[in-house]
Image (cartoon, rainbow, N blue to C red; front, side, top):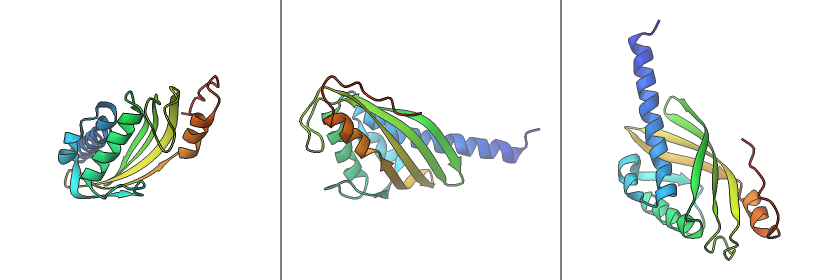
Length: 155
């Protein structure tokens, strides 16, 4: 039997999940205007990429770099887990390497990379994001011979 508290908890978890899903949309579309709605002005991104500034503007710059390198960049959520004010997300990101990226000239290869993110939500906005990306796996794909198959990221 559902109680009001169960309903409130479910509604809060759904709203929180929607905020976090919106965070990933710019990776697909390139439109970072949603960050004014979902990221706190003093949002903290840990760790920063080389040359990235802290805050929403720094993330917008990273989106531009990813989208330049892989215009068809997509994020496939494998798991989204909400607990309290934190949301854990396990993703597989993919795209076709069509622009310079991390010192690699375009290869035309389709890549996949695993990522893990933890977002902290306060007052309806993401205040902190911690993340890990499998850049070693990505580099192995970019350095592989042109006819090597793209390994399927475990999911």
